[in-house]
Image (cartoon, rainbow, N blue to C red; front, side):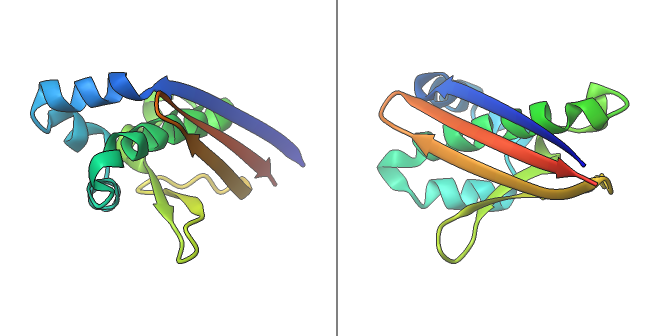
Amino acid sequence: MKISCGTDIIEIRRIKESIEQTDQKFLERVYTNKEIQYCESKKAQKYQHYAARFAAKEATFKAISSNLTSKYDIGWQNIEVINDENGRPHINLLDIEISEIEEMDISISHCKEYATANVVVVWK
């Protein structure tokens, strides 16, 4: 059994500026429809949630990258961060299968200026 982890932190302001300056192109390139719907439902705090998901995608990539043939094997929309009925975040890998993953766990946090995420992967 092997365990790997990834972590990321991002300034919320950077994500907000990217979204506002690209007129939806950044959103469509990075986030899935479910993620966009979730973040938009947060109204005034939506940029915190977008930034948290961005950090989660980066942390996921860092945690699984050692088992990828190339960094181009996975894209932004192959990693989806959704919340269960209790509000706990989970990672879905879309259109990519990494059969060696036994379990994956994520923790996300954000405040006024920063969002961070940690991902732990247990490999078979």
